[in-house]
Length: 292
Image 1: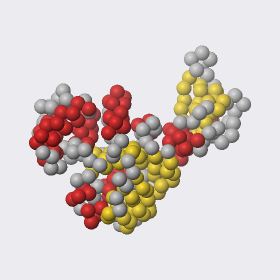
Image 2 (image 1 turned 135 degrees about the vertical axis):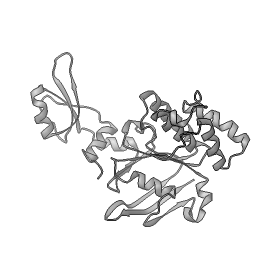
Image 3 (image 1 turned 30 degrees about the horizontal axis):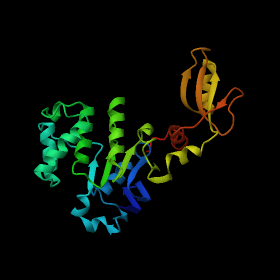
Image 4 (image 1 turned 180 degrees about the vertical axis):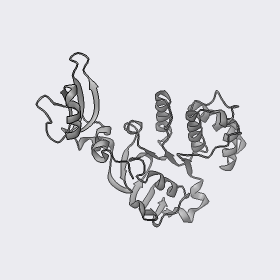
């Protein structure tokens, strides 16, 4: 299975949301990483045919997806960032409704729905109305409907937004488990959610791909460029003015402030180099960018 996105562009008036986006995806997890407003949701809405591109082409196994029409949409599972749910439906009724829309048989629905609700930790509230669910529960229900029907392509827009750390880990593990025979594209700006599960990371800034590689290759690009710098509390602001500081902590033994700093050369005599993380590379690329 191969999803090819070729030279996709999209503008909203004078605002260029995507500029010649090109990528080829096969089975596995891909992360679309970038700040808010970088074009992630625009791309996902184009992929799911909720939005028309201004130019470019998308093919699946060599066939134009617009020509495939319903045949392509049947292969898709989509988790939008801002879903429209039915507040008076119960969790169970909503899943049966989505199963009917996807054309699942009664037997297949009876098999899949309990399994999926258990996987996203909603099996204890099947009779609860959606309007009474917490934000995190609604988020997990939106993921549940996306994986219903065992789609070949799974498009997930900010899948862990609003979840607590335990739920985020559970959802991350679940996505990894089902991704072996699917193309999974996850849009997020939360780096830890994809650092250890994505085979490739596409970094997007103002509609343009600025990097595209496996996580370990991205991190290697700033080897020797991340430092822990001890300093006095009154020196912190000056260090922030001079360097990109990604974290501030305190050494409980010495009382000194420990800054995590991005710098190409040794920032101070007492600084020590440390191993970079994907979050360090994200900040190296995007800095304080808002994506606007």
